[in-house]
Length: 437
Image (cartoon, rainbow, N blue to C red; front, side, top):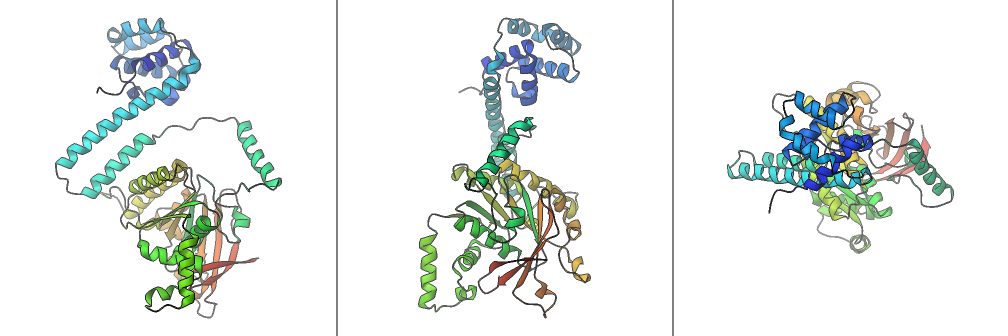
């Protein structure tokens, strides 16, 4: 079989660009010269792009002049003449553009695979590094950095109006993924495309809190949930999920003798959650490319429906390459990549993040945005930042069962609210109180 290409589609797009300014704009916005297979087609499209950038008209005369200036007219003049007689209606331009993009993606995939087959045969020093690099390169083909298309505000208004109308009529709420706690009244759920940070000091309850949210989403809201832990193995995670869901005391997992009531709770969990979807991944050394690849694979497995992702935790994510950079610079790059992930997946992504130890020195130990400054500034990339705090950690006179959630930042919500919650450490469960301070 030959190299994937479609010359008819390439000719149709180039012909459309010569006769229709609208078609030219769409082609320039969607394609790169490298997406064309035929060498002469690449030359012509590059010349058309150069004219477009210079705000000059694109027709057979200006195109010929542009190619002449580049010393390439003799190579492409016959193709330009042929395109003049192959006018294709701009009404089909999107169809032709997709064909060209698809064929280009297949060629890139073949090229990348051949490159990494050769690299694999040379016995690389780091197999993990090669796999991570290969995964990242292939994902770039699947999700190129293309510019978002403009949308008339009226169409977005209609979508917003429809959601509000649905809520008012008593239909299913249009809120995002809920936590099952009183903060839902303020945050209204995590929405697709949002990056959410759950921050706290060591042992403050970040993992337990996020698992409470994940359990509520999967078992009460019937959503597809992914939980990636770079710190805890899947057995420990599942034990915590059982404790939260079935109020099964966590210390009983270490005991060899269980009572009848304990077995009933375990059996109930097993039968009651058969059709639920809480997926866990416990690999300890993941890069952002590997995380992205695993999530794309899971989303495909779930028929393209992944409702929320949890990642525990930010500082444990490995950089693709740490050569010549400080850890803070690495974390800054990782944060930027994580910011893109929710939009690529069209899914809210909740990321746990450790606060620096400087907070111990001050009197008020509640998390602040400034406590993240030495962690690559992920708070700048996040849409929502929520702090978790257990006063008992720092003041033994406070209740051990008091846990606080502080809405520290929200792009569309007011920050500053502190919710006081009931923490049950024996079953790792968090329950809400209705008051806030």
